[in-house]
Image 1 (cartoon, rainbow over the protein chains, first blue to last red):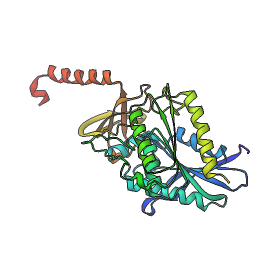
Image 2 (image 1 turned 30 degrees about the horizontal axis):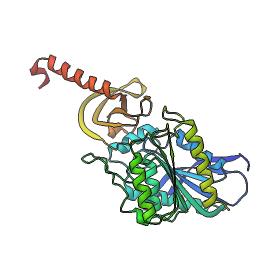
Image 3 (image 1 turned 90 degrees about the vertical axis):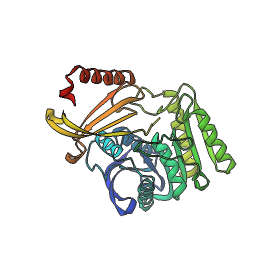
Image 4 (image 1 turned 45 degrees about the vertical axis):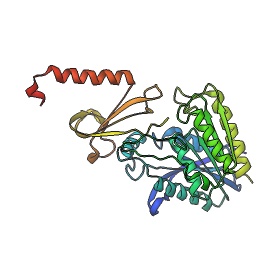
Amino acid sequence: MGDSMTAQTIRIDGHGGDRIEAYLARPAEDTRRGGVVVIHHMPGYDRATKEIVRRFAELGYDAICPNLHWREAPGAAPDDAAATVRAAGGVPDERLVGDVGGAVACLRSLPSSNRRVGVIGYCSGGRQAVLAACNLDVDAVVDCYGAFVVGTPPEGFPLRVTNLVDQLPNLRAPLLGLFGNDDSHPSPEQVDELDEILTADDKPHEFHRYDDAGHAFFSVDRPAYRVAAANDGWERIAAFYETYLGG
Amino acid sequence: MCTYATVRTAIDGSAKGPGSSWFHVTDGTVYFDHPVHALPEHTLNIDFADPARGPGARVAVELTAASARGLVAAIEAALESAPAELTA
């Protein structure tokens, strides 16, 4: 596998047919391969997220990240866009599903596609990745410490979010979950609860839980970064996607 | 965690922001969540913004919980110290 790639900003058809921005990275090699949709975290469609997209291309996948904040803040700095969307109430779940669905369709339309597509999300994107996999035809999903897949979200604030317990029976893809044992959202108890629900529903899943790691341990530009957990996590992700997206 | 907690309030004032220029601000958004720049895992974040001028018309601060509480007390103290007829 080579490490040459192309990376570019494109437009895709998102929820409701809206044309939204997305960042697409593709290996240069002429191969048939799977695709990965990266769901950015609440702080936005930022440099760190685009680095993750390129890493998936380096791993041999066509990878894309839709800009979930494009409608409210086209062309804005990622932090300004995130603040604008937050003040407006956040990204609605229905719109998220539509935008990720558009990204999945974009990947499957590429001539290099083997038709298999995975989804991955971090932090708020972890919950959204699970949400997408409960509503879209995808082949694998990775949840990196997403809060409120289970558990009770705060009430009484303009930014509303619900847990996904009632949607988990519709989960359509194997789930890889990566969690820090020092995290409080999701707490180890909530990870246990999710594990029990998925086991009871006979949903294929694989969880890895790391000591000396809390929330956002993949974030290389934050004090939360934990090299041991992140390195092992990346290896788990690569193996998981090789299993379900390879070939 | 992403707390998702967000509190909005209408404000009327000015802020010095992008390009060192002053602009009128109409919206305050307050939330305790991950910061973009500050190093703690969570901070009390305030956006002073004028959405009518676009997403970039924003002055943002990210404060530790302790310093945010200190700021609240300082604001209250400053308001209390002024003659009541000026702050009504």
